[in-house]
Image 1 (cartoon, rainbow, N blue to C red):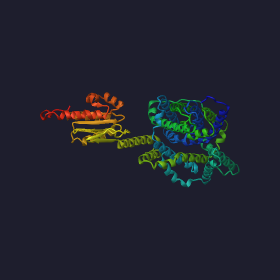
Image 2 (tube, rainbow, N blue to C red):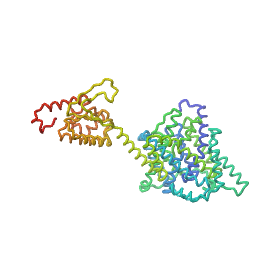
Image 3 (cartoon, rainbow, N blue to C red):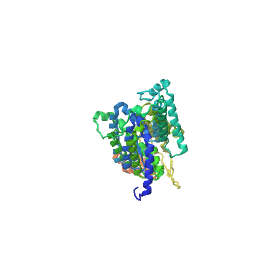
Image 4 (cartoon, helix red, strand yellow):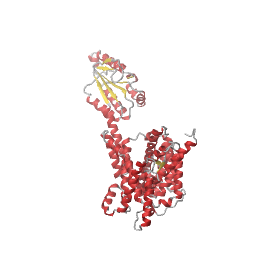
Amino acid sequence: MWKGYDVARFKSDLTAGIVVGIVALPLAIAFAIASGVSPSIGLITAIIGGFIVSALGGNSVQIGGPTGAFIVIVYSIIQQFGLTGLAIATVMAGLILVLMGLFRLGTVIKFIPYPIVVGFTAGIAITIFSTQINDFFGMGLRDLPGDFLTKWSVLIANVSRIDWITMLVGIVSLLIITLTPRISQKLPGALISIIVVTAGCWLLGMFMPEFHVETIGDRFGDMKSDIPMPHGFTVNMATINALLPSAFTIAMLGAIESLLSATVADGITGSRTNSNTELFGQGIANIVVPLFGGIPVTGAIARTMTNITNGGRTPLAGMIHSVVLLLIYLFFMPLINLVPMACLAAVLMVVAYNMSGWRTVKAISHNPKGDFSVLLVTMILTIVFDLTIAIEIGLLLAMVLFLRRVTENAEIKVYGKQLDVAEGTEMHTHEVLRVEKGVSVYEIDGPFFFGIATKFDEMMRSTMQDKPLVRIIRMRKVPFIDSTGIHNLETLIKSSQKEGIKIVLSGVQPNVHSALVRSDIVNLIGEKNICDHISKAVALANNIVRDYNVLPEWRRRGLDPV
């Protein structure tokens, strides 16, 4: 990464860092206010957290800071436990992320189903949008309910309180944000909107004293530009138990968003993210930032993309972005007090629109119904309840649907008098085996876990009336077996032995064979009755039947075919 670093690359990183710092400014402020904290906390989070993520993370172009994804969970924690509770939960989340990195769980996070990610992201977007209605329309409502449905009932009941001047300021802000990219993709629409609208409102206020819209200064008072000193907090087991679910949600959400951002960045730059190092860096950032009063930190996709498109290729660009925000924080905080709240609401509405991913939602609606159901359930639970419940239920539903698909796609075949060895393979030479009367051949195609085990058990019970002398269970396509499969297989062997039926296993893979050894099934069935190929299993079964058939009738009675 640093090999061959020269002046030209430094200039690219410097340019990218300055641009990203400017772009990050309105977002840090807006996300902080929407989360229920002051703008200064958002800036402190972006400054300290962004620097640590760039310095210690596993992706060279990742830009860290507060993001829209955390708004819902942060706002909920503050309502229930206050700022101290948020700080403790964030530190706990940081520790979880560090442990995930140390235990090399970075790749595991990537296995979270895509419909769940799209679902909770869309749910967060709708929730963010709903939180901005009050400020966008200048309704002046205080202490709005936190839950979605009650909040909208209060908003609808107070439609008469809409301030038309404030709404006009919000509409102008929206127009500037959406039209700026048509002039130039490199111009940050959110920042241009804040500068133009803030200047316009200030000038109108100078010449028209009756003109006034609520500003950041009106809401939070004049904010100081002093860097807060680190502080600790008291923690006990009761607090930890109460905040652990929220901390886990912050950690999972941070891991998902940062690794998703890193994956997108890798696709553009051709680099390769060290997922575990990235989680470690995110964890350290979330441990340190709360000590300065900050909120959760994660990788930000939009800011990371801005960094890449402006030439940033090393962590230095992310560090410069933090320095730019620090300079703004130290020298321009008085100007931030003049920004209208309606303008910030417009910024967040655009962020919510971009987060919603409605095109992706529409595309997934054409996919299998199970995927779309997971998306809808996750989205609705995020909106109506909270992110913790949404992710938990979404994952549970996704797993249930996955197991159902595996069970439905897995096959259990029953062969008759003949068996083609090449069936189900790419072999061109067909070897047809003759199966003696009294031999039943079953083949399990798929993992022998609890779903398939039950299905196989039901099939065996349905064929119990056809009592053979030997049952061959072909397991060449069984990649693994779980405890339920082992239990059902053991039960089948014992019940078959009581009825005088021999069990022969064929094509058992090494890892499945190891599981059978550990469970003592090999001793139960006998090693000689576990064959590595179906031709050997059929030959063994045919011999058992022939030997049994040549016995006199009086010898067969009461004798097992074994």
